[in-house]
Image 1: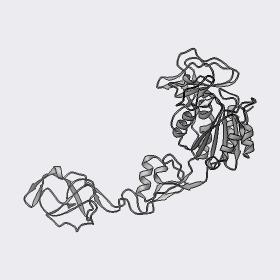
Image 2 (image 1 turned 120 degrees about the vertical axis):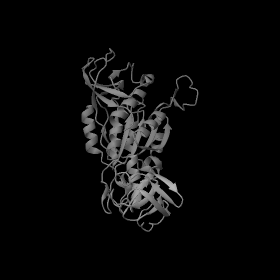
Image 3 (image 1 turned 60 degrees about the vertical axis):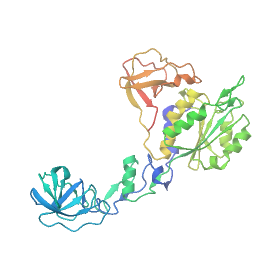
Image 4 (image 1 turned 135 degrees about the vertical axis):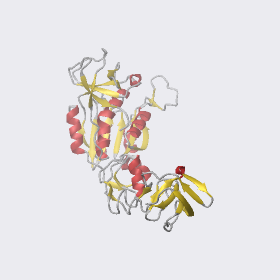
Length: 390
């Protein structure tokens, strides 16, 4: 049985980033850029006004100026102005060379001209190439694409950037006792909570849910679903339930039948011990224990690690936080990831009964990592796994 650290090291060794691909700009947020982006032209591409006002000779003094025309945003570069002349301009208007802009607040209209009362120090002109010259680097290869980076790509005309791919995930829930959440359970049945849980966690993690299906206990049904196109094309296959060693737990044999090499069958982790991981030609399959608390823990500790590796993103570091007072953490021989709430004052452990205690997740935004055999005390620093968006 692997330790948590051994399994995370194994993921680093066996899971490589996806091949780079081109995507629409609208789909690129949060991905890693797989190309260097150079400016196709000077930015700004022309001298332009930073204010609404009047363009006059750069060395002119306050006084009366005759207005000889105007420059509208989007129009051609106008002719220059002579001494005593002014050009009506607006924010973004193209400017002729050798002018400054006086803000309209510092002027007064007089007949066919304008009286400039004061000339401040700024010229209010954004000069051509002042931000970047043609051929200059605007984004380096490997940067993470934030909303601001998307705007920079758009300014450079890059509408289909080359990025490390976003992992596509197919999710299968299993079990004859599982029914749709909209139905009323009969005795012995339970509503499907893992489907909405996984969908939301994938969205938080920046992955794409390509398909979700449900199968009963018959491994032939689950195997047939996993051979459907959406499942075959997924970078990650998640199977909820069936990862323990019982007579009706078939996830391991299903993955082997699909050609996955099983690299983990159990991990020394509480909750979440019966975790299966397989790899096949760049694809990764994970069999998650079906209980909801185990699902939540194994997703944040291992599945998000896999997704980050596939997307070429840095794996989120676990940080140290001060443990707030409370007597809910109990020592266990296995390494435990304890549900908790993280705030400015530190991290507080929450009570939970067992791996099936779904309501224990209410308010959880962190997991406290408790080494096997240890019981941290209030005031000590503990390692914390953040639960939420990257």
